[in-house]
Amino acid sequence: MALTAVKGFNDILPDESGRWHYIEQTARRVFERNGFGEIRVPVMEKTELFCRSIGDATDIVEKEMYTFIDKGENSVTLRPEGTAGVMRAFIEHKMYAQDPVSKLYYLGPMFRYERPQKGRYRQFHQIGAELTGAHDPLADAQVLNMLVSFFNEIGLTEPSLQINSLGCPECRPAYRAALRSFLEERIAHLCEDCKRRFATNPLRTLDCKVPGCVEATAGAPSVLEHLCSGCDEHFTTVRRYLDLSQTRYDINSRMVRGLDYYTRTTFEMVTGLLGSQSAVAAGGRYDGLISQLGGPAIPGIGFAMGLERVALLLGGQEFCSFPDLFIATMGVGERDVAFRLMAGLLKSGVRVEMDYEGKSLKSQMRRADKLKSRYCVVIGENEVLSGKASFKRMADGFQADAALTVAGIQSLVGTSEQ
Ligand code: HAM
Image (cartoon, rainbow, N blue to C red; front, side, top):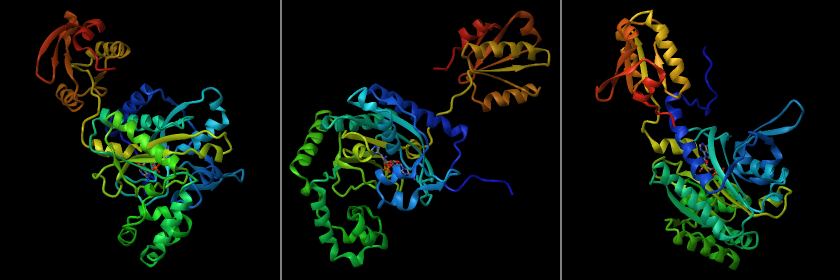
């Protein structure tokens, strides 16, 4: 039996990868314009890093991590998200000593043992950004504006921004207590997971999609009514900055996040087009994380988007790139001329294709069509003798002669290469 990929792990084939390049290039352009530089960290870290950052009582750490013992008896984990590893590197390399404010972005595969479905995979890809060193709500607004700009520039208007504040270690315990006392009478109606969450992580019950839990938590106290004055003022100022920059958002006080490190502002870009996988991007502020991981008391805020989900939203648009020119040949003798031209044109940045197998002219023309080449030329004995040939623009049939030299062909055909 032929071998297949591991369940929930996908291949990205060439006709799909054009869309991925477009997403990655747009993100790089928008992020770098905002002063973010790329950081590349390993896909595997010590397990303890994720337990200490994401939190022991989260679904990710409890149920979804790819953890194993390596040959040196160390417990290691394939990263389920990017923030923890980036902050580990930030502390390890004392990046805060170079610049008080640091802006980093990253992209790559993440791994979670979830039940695969459309928009949810076991290996998936994130593009994320992290800004550290700024307490000011202005930093929250800049990060949010950058995320919204990415979606605008990529041509997606549908995912909309939802924001919330989860308070801080000062005000959250009182909210947690208020929520617990609300849930106490309703505990019998909660699902088994939420019964457990009631004790360990009651805020997560607000996020549960099970109908009984949605009903039982309707009317639960709002976190926004339990913020301390510092958190309240922070959230009000973030909103003021968003209004100043004309960024549209909705407040969703039931939005809680699946990772424990968040403080104050949290947010999601949500869509109605991907079924239950409604978050295309998500993030928030994590003012305690860096010190929790052994670094100095430096605040941070960031987000990550799911590349597969962005790709699904972009839908069937065409992102492949096509050859500039297909060189067809009449006979075997002309293949030397064609190959020499192809080699020269490729070096000058023109995308050229020719036939490799000595196929008939008809079959070569079919291939030129299939590859959607912009131009096509047929080289026979006459063309070799005269040193020029007629080039056909496939879209409209326009024909023009050009010398059979790299410079001659390039000046007619141009190049689609950026
Ligand atoms: P997260 O909400 O766990 O946050 O994931 C961020 C995004 O990754 C989600 O909104 C979704 O688009 C995508 N995603 C998550 N799991 C899957 C999956 N199984 N399959 C496909 N896509 C998925 C974080 O990971 C935080 N590190 C974000 C952050 C950065 N917060 C601050 N900085």
